[in-house]
View (cartoon, one colour):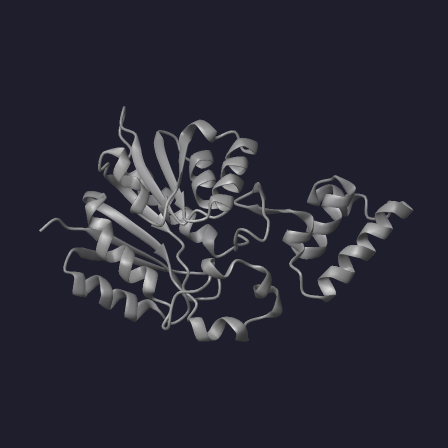
Amino acid sequence: MNETELLFTDILGCSRLELYLNKDKKIDNDKLLFISSVLKRRIKAEPIQYILGKTEFMGLEFKVTPDVLIPRQETEILVETTIKYGYRLSVVGYRARILDLGTGSGCIAVSLAKLMRGVEITATDISSKAIEIAEYNAGINNVSEKIRFINSDLFSGLGVYGGARYDIIVSNPPYIPFGEIDTLQAEIRYEPRAALDGGNDGLDIYRKLIKEAPVYLKENGLLIMEIGFGQKSAIENIFRESGEYEIIEVIKDYSDIERVIVAQFKKT
Protein backbone atom coordinates (compact mmCIF):
# COMPACT_ATOMS: atom_id res chain seq x y z
CA MET A 1 0.00 0.00 0.00
CA ASN A 2 1.12 3.57 -0.61
CA GLU A 3 1.24 6.15 2.20
CA THR A 4 -2.25 7.52 1.60
CA GLU A 5 -3.77 4.04 1.58
CA LEU A 6 -1.85 3.07 4.71
CA LEU A 7 -3.08 6.17 6.54
CA PHE A 8 -6.73 5.97 5.58
CA THR A 9 -7.13 2.21 6.00
CA ASP A 10 -5.72 2.62 9.50
CA ILE A 11 -7.94 5.57 10.41
CA LEU A 12 -11.10 4.02 8.98
CA GLY A 13 -10.30 0.49 10.13
CA CYS A 14 -10.91 -0.97 6.69
CA SER A 15 -9.13 -2.91 3.97
CA ARG A 16 -7.60 -1.33 0.87
CA LEU A 17 -10.49 -2.65 -1.21
CA GLU A 18 -13.09 -1.27 1.22
CA LEU A 19 -11.35 2.09 1.11
CA TYR A 20 -12.07 2.45 -2.59
CA LEU A 21 -15.53 0.91 -2.45
CA ASN A 22 -16.54 3.46 0.22
CA LYS A 23 -14.62 6.48 -1.09
CA ASP A 24 -17.56 8.84 -0.49
CA LYS A 25 -17.78 7.98 3.21
CA LYS A 26 -17.59 11.03 5.51
CA ILE A 27 -14.84 11.27 8.10
CA ASP A 28 -15.69 12.60 11.56
CA ASN A 29 -13.90 15.56 13.13
CA ASP A 30 -11.71 13.55 15.51
CA LYS A 31 -10.29 11.57 12.61
CA LEU A 32 -9.79 14.73 10.57
CA LEU A 33 -7.77 16.21 13.45
CA PHE A 34 -5.66 13.05 13.57
CA ILE A 35 -5.05 13.27 9.82
CA SER A 36 -3.94 16.87 10.29
CA SER A 37 -1.47 15.87 13.02
CA VAL A 38 -0.09 13.10 10.82
CA LEU A 39 0.43 15.49 7.93
CA LYS A 40 2.31 17.93 10.18
CA ARG A 41 4.67 15.13 11.25
CA ARG A 42 5.12 14.00 7.64
CA ILE A 43 6.08 17.56 6.64
CA LYS A 44 9.01 17.10 9.03
CA ALA A 45 9.86 13.87 7.11
CA GLU A 46 8.87 11.46 9.88
CA PRO A 47 8.02 8.16 8.14
CA ILE A 48 4.33 7.32 8.03
CA GLN A 49 5.12 3.82 9.30
CA TYR A 50 6.58 5.21 12.53
CA ILE A 51 3.69 7.63 12.94
CA LEU A 52 1.14 4.82 12.68
CA GLY A 53 3.41 2.35 14.49
CA LYS A 54 2.97 -0.36 11.90
CA THR A 55 3.53 -1.40 8.31
CA GLU A 56 2.74 -4.19 5.88
CA PHE A 57 5.27 -6.70 4.57
CA MET A 58 4.59 -9.89 2.59
CA GLY A 59 0.89 -9.27 3.20
CA LEU A 60 1.40 -9.38 6.98
CA GLU A 61 1.17 -6.62 9.59
CA PHE A 62 4.26 -5.62 11.57
CA LYS A 63 4.76 -3.24 14.46
CA VAL A 64 7.59 -0.77 13.77
CA THR A 65 9.22 1.89 15.92
CA PRO A 66 12.40 3.96 15.48
CA ASP A 67 14.22 1.03 17.15
CA VAL A 68 13.90 -1.02 13.94
CA LEU A 69 14.40 -0.47 10.23
CA ILE A 70 11.18 -0.07 8.25
CA PRO A 71 10.77 -3.17 6.03
CA ARG A 72 11.19 -2.38 2.34
CA GLN A 73 9.43 -3.90 -0.64
CA GLU A 74 12.81 -4.97 -2.03
CA THR A 75 13.37 -7.19 1.00
CA GLU A 76 10.33 -9.23 0.00
CA ILE A 77 12.56 -10.56 -2.80
CA LEU A 78 14.97 -11.83 -0.14
CA VAL A 79 12.11 -13.66 1.59
CA GLU A 80 10.76 -15.07 -1.68
CA THR A 81 14.23 -16.31 -2.64
CA THR A 82 14.71 -17.98 0.73
CA ILE A 83 11.33 -19.71 0.41
CA LYS A 84 12.24 -20.93 -3.08
CA TYR A 85 15.49 -22.51 -1.91
CA GLY A 86 13.99 -23.68 1.37
CA TYR A 87 11.36 -25.74 -0.38
CA ARG A 88 14.06 -27.43 -2.43
CA LEU A 89 15.39 -28.80 0.85
CA SER A 90 12.01 -30.07 1.96
CA VAL A 91 11.58 -33.80 2.24
CA VAL A 92 9.06 -35.77 4.27
CA GLY A 93 9.95 -35.57 7.95
CA TYR A 94 12.82 -33.09 7.52
CA ARG A 95 12.69 -29.67 9.12
CA ALA A 96 14.92 -27.14 7.39
CA ARG A 97 16.89 -24.96 9.81
CA ILE A 98 17.09 -21.25 8.95
CA LEU A 99 19.08 -18.50 10.69
CA ASP A 100 18.03 -14.86 10.23
CA LEU A 101 20.86 -12.51 11.20
CA GLY A 102 19.98 -8.93 12.13
CA THR A 103 16.27 -9.62 12.31
CA GLY A 104 15.19 -6.07 13.26
CA SER A 105 11.38 -6.02 13.22
CA GLY A 106 11.42 -9.76 12.55
CA CYS A 107 9.88 -9.22 9.11
CA ILE A 108 12.06 -11.88 7.43
CA ALA A 109 11.86 -14.53 10.15
CA VAL A 110 8.13 -14.04 10.77
CA SER A 111 7.30 -14.10 7.06
CA LEU A 112 9.31 -17.30 6.57
CA ALA A 113 7.63 -18.92 9.56
CA LYS A 114 4.21 -17.88 8.31
CA LEU A 115 4.69 -18.94 4.70
CA MET A 116 6.78 -22.11 5.08
CA ARG A 117 6.00 -25.46 6.62
CA GLY A 118 8.46 -27.71 8.38
CA VAL A 119 11.04 -25.08 9.31
CA GLU A 120 12.91 -24.19 12.49
CA ILE A 121 13.98 -20.55 12.58
CA THR A 122 16.48 -18.76 14.76
CA ALA A 123 16.63 -14.95 14.57
CA THR A 124 19.26 -12.70 16.11
CA ASP A 125 19.73 -8.98 16.61
CA ILE A 126 22.26 -6.90 18.53
CA SER A 127 19.44 -4.64 19.78
CA SER A 128 17.39 -5.95 22.69
CA LYS A 129 14.64 -3.47 21.79
CA ALA A 130 14.52 -4.89 18.27
CA ILE A 131 14.22 -8.41 19.69
CA GLU A 132 11.24 -7.30 21.79
CA ILE A 133 9.51 -5.89 18.71
CA ALA A 134 10.33 -8.99 16.65
CA GLU A 135 8.89 -11.23 19.37
CA TYR A 136 5.74 -9.10 19.42
CA ASN A 137 5.42 -9.39 15.65
CA ALA A 138 5.83 -13.15 15.84
CA GLY A 139 3.00 -13.18 18.38
CA ILE A 140 0.51 -11.12 16.39
CA ASN A 141 1.21 -13.31 13.35
CA ASN A 142 0.83 -16.54 15.36
CA VAL A 143 4.29 -17.98 14.68
CA SER A 144 6.00 -17.55 18.06
CA GLU A 145 6.44 -21.30 18.48
CA LYS A 146 8.39 -21.55 15.21
CA ILE A 147 11.04 -18.91 15.96
CA ARG A 148 13.75 -18.68 18.62
CA PHE A 149 14.90 -15.08 19.11
CA ILE A 150 18.39 -14.38 20.47
CA ASN A 151 19.89 -11.03 21.49
CA SER A 152 23.22 -11.44 19.69
CA ASP A 153 25.76 -9.52 17.60
CA LEU A 154 25.50 -11.66 14.46
CA PHE A 155 26.83 -15.13 15.42
CA SER A 156 28.30 -14.22 18.81
CA GLY A 157 25.38 -15.45 20.92
CA LEU A 158 24.90 -18.76 19.15
CA GLY A 159 27.67 -20.69 20.85
CA VAL A 160 25.46 -21.59 23.81
CA TYR A 161 23.26 -23.58 21.44
CA GLY A 162 25.80 -26.30 20.83
CA GLY A 163 27.32 -25.17 17.54
CA ALA A 164 24.11 -25.90 15.63
CA ARG A 165 24.41 -25.75 11.85
CA TYR A 166 21.84 -24.33 9.46
CA ASP A 167 20.58 -25.16 6.00
CA ILE A 168 20.15 -21.47 5.19
CA ILE A 169 21.53 -18.28 6.69
CA VAL A 170 19.60 -15.23 5.52
CA SER A 171 20.40 -11.60 6.21
CA ASN A 172 19.64 -8.04 5.17
CA PRO A 173 22.83 -6.44 6.51
CA PRO A 174 23.56 -2.72 6.81
CA TYR A 175 25.03 -1.82 3.41
CA ILE A 176 25.06 1.97 3.11
CA PRO A 177 28.57 3.48 3.14
CA PHE A 178 29.06 5.58 6.26
CA GLY A 179 29.74 8.79 4.32
CA GLU A 180 26.53 8.51 2.31
CA ILE A 181 24.00 8.14 5.12
CA ASP A 182 23.59 11.86 5.76
CA THR A 183 23.06 12.51 2.05
CA LEU A 184 20.00 10.25 1.83
CA GLN A 185 16.38 11.40 1.99
CA ALA A 186 15.32 13.08 5.22
CA GLU A 187 13.18 10.12 6.38
CA ILE A 188 16.31 8.02 6.84
CA ARG A 189 17.45 10.05 9.86
CA TYR A 190 14.54 8.59 11.86
CA GLU A 191 15.74 5.03 11.32
CA PRO A 192 18.34 3.27 13.52
CA ARG A 193 21.78 4.15 12.19
CA ALA A 194 23.20 0.77 13.16
CA ALA A 195 20.77 -0.87 10.73
CA LEU A 196 22.07 1.30 7.88
CA ASP A 197 25.80 1.83 8.45
CA GLY A 198 27.89 -0.64 6.47
CA GLY A 199 31.25 1.01 7.20
CA ASN A 200 33.44 3.04 4.86
CA ASP A 201 32.49 1.10 1.72
CA GLY A 202 29.22 -0.44 2.91
CA LEU A 203 30.69 -3.95 2.97
CA ASP A 204 31.92 -4.42 6.56
CA ILE A 205 29.14 -6.80 7.61
CA TYR A 206 29.36 -8.79 4.36
CA ARG A 207 33.02 -9.50 5.02
CA LYS A 208 32.19 -10.69 8.52
CA LEU A 209 29.23 -12.82 7.46
CA ILE A 210 31.08 -14.48 4.58
CA LYS A 211 34.08 -15.23 6.80
CA GLU A 212 32.15 -16.58 9.80
CA ALA A 213 29.12 -18.28 8.22
CA PRO A 214 30.88 -21.58 7.29
CA VAL A 215 31.12 -22.49 10.99
CA TYR A 216 27.32 -22.36 11.18
CA LEU A 217 26.34 -23.71 7.76
CA LYS A 218 25.75 -27.32 6.92
CA GLU A 219 27.73 -28.67 3.99
CA ASN A 220 26.09 -27.27 0.82
CA GLY A 221 24.15 -24.84 3.01
CA LEU A 222 23.19 -21.45 1.59
CA LEU A 223 24.07 -17.89 2.54
CA ILE A 224 21.38 -15.58 1.10
CA MET A 225 21.81 -11.83 1.49
CA GLU A 226 20.28 -8.58 0.30
CA ILE A 227 22.82 -6.28 -1.35
CA GLY A 228 22.92 -2.59 -2.21
CA PHE A 229 23.10 -0.78 -5.53
CA GLY A 230 26.38 -1.41 -7.34
CA GLN A 231 27.73 -3.84 -4.73
CA LYS A 232 27.35 -7.10 -6.68
CA SER A 233 30.89 -7.36 -8.06
CA ALA A 234 32.59 -6.41 -4.79
CA ILE A 235 30.55 -8.94 -2.80
CA GLU A 236 31.16 -11.65 -5.39
CA ASN A 237 34.90 -10.97 -4.99
CA ILE A 238 34.65 -11.38 -1.21
CA PHE A 239 32.96 -14.75 -1.74
CA ARG A 240 35.61 -15.87 -4.25
CA GLU A 241 38.50 -14.75 -2.05
CA SER A 242 37.14 -16.84 0.82
CA GLY A 243 37.44 -19.96 -1.34
CA GLU A 244 34.53 -21.59 0.50
CA TYR A 245 31.49 -20.75 -1.61
CA GLU A 246 29.98 -21.13 -5.03
CA ILE A 247 27.77 -18.23 -6.14
CA ILE A 248 24.49 -19.77 -7.25
CA GLU A 249 22.32 -16.83 -8.27
CA VAL A 250 21.95 -13.05 -8.19
CA ILE A 251 18.36 -11.78 -8.33
CA LYS A 252 17.35 -8.33 -9.52
CA ASP A 253 14.65 -6.21 -7.92
CA TYR A 254 11.69 -4.45 -9.55
CA SER A 255 13.98 -1.62 -10.69
CA ASP A 256 16.39 -4.03 -12.42
CA ILE A 257 18.99 -3.62 -9.64
CA GLU A 258 20.92 -6.65 -8.36
CA ARG A 259 19.32 -7.08 -4.94
CA VAL A 260 19.80 -10.62 -3.59
CA ILE A 261 22.82 -12.91 -3.79
CA VAL A 262 22.75 -16.67 -3.12
CA ALA A 263 25.96 -18.56 -2.36
CA GLN A 264 26.48 -22.20 -1.42
CA PHE A 265 29.02 -23.30 1.17
CA LYS A 266 31.42 -25.88 -0.19
CA LYS A 267 33.28 -27.71 2.55
CA THR A 268 36.99 -27.91 1.73
